[in-house]
Length: 116
Image (cartoon, rainbow, N blue to C red):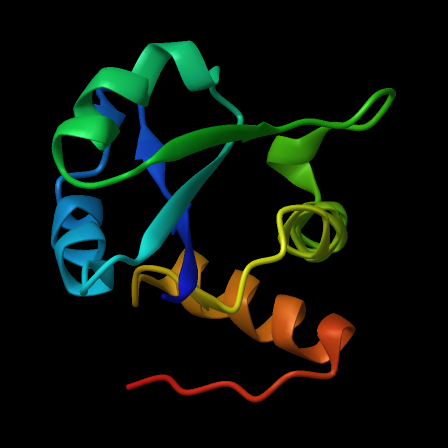
């Protein structure tokens, strides 16, 4: 069993539809899937993410920092969250935001990165 983390991207209408494909890709025999959301409450998207395989939704927050304007802060918090929840692999969208954030996370975690 692997513990897969999925970095969820949102927009003004909620969870971006492409995230559901990433959740489907993360599913496997007995995989545990933790969805990490930044900038929205976990409660706002838990139901939808749970229907598509997330076993837990974690809201990544910072005190005193504007997460929306600091990808470095977002990446640092994601590294901490992935360690805290003992994630084996972290997946995300291949959007420009996703690629940028995943590269920052990999660099901070000294972890390999695969992107298209």
